Image (cartoon, rainbow, N blue to C red):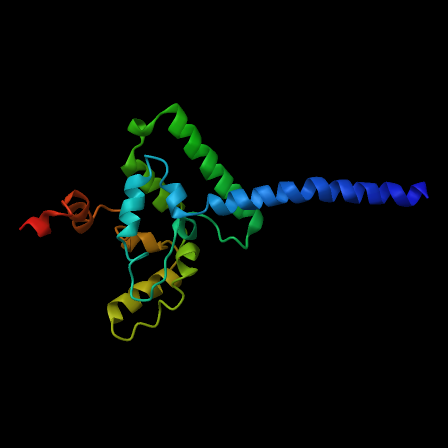
Length: 185
């Protein structure tokens, strides 16, 4: 009888301990995976504001690409995803607490982000980039990225560098504009 109870006891303890740990981990990952959470750091707020005005949010298809879509491996690569997410999060918290918002160099961090983004991250959403019947130049440019000659490898962000995290005059105008001005005129 003892041979049967010992394994069952370990299974029960595993479930009692494992389920809350798994649930808490999952809950934490879901809550910290939104663009709004990323924007809670003062350093990231300008990038978040610029992202809201970009075509990754405002496009004709209604699709929204959030921070994780570009800055992390795909979620189906579970270990790589959790590792990268944890590493980025801990690094950001450390820098925020140790150096403060004033020490954050947007330009340098933007360049690091561009260097870390691989074409496969863009191609998760942009799959059909070779069929552009109305824009032969773009079709040929995309072909050089998809099928590069040795030594001439290019990244999507080489051409699409100012697509997302740049200050846009329209957003700055709306941000600085008095919303009640039109009513008084």
